[in-house]
Image 1 (cartoon, rainbow, N blue to C red):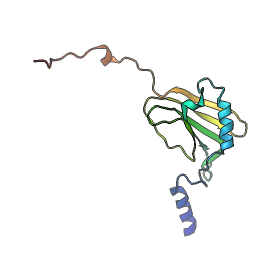
Image 2: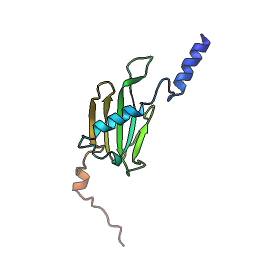
Image 3: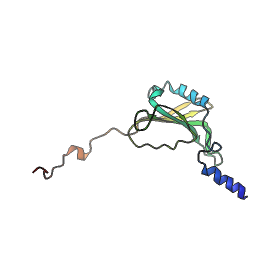
Image 4: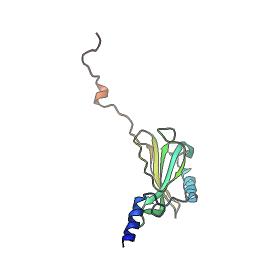
Length: 142
């Protein structure tokens, strides 16, 4: 029993282990990228840092849903993003600066692509009350 518990702890401790979180097959990602070529918002794939990983499963013993590939794209040249493809076991990337982003999901069995979002991750700036009213106060000039 102790060995079984130790194996479970070890499996969860190695977050990106291939048993729990396999990487999508390159051939499936090739098909996904081919299907995305017709998406006007995505455009030329070389303008993106592209991340691919299996979707999270709802099954307790199988955390990776190998029937669906999640994708997240970040605008290359912004922040630390570099154009290219990254097939990963998990995407732990968080970015809170302004950039063009896209994400969605690919159904490996049917070949259907769903682009869930594509555009700026920041809403357009709108003037707030402080922008419309200059602050007046004592002058620092002598």
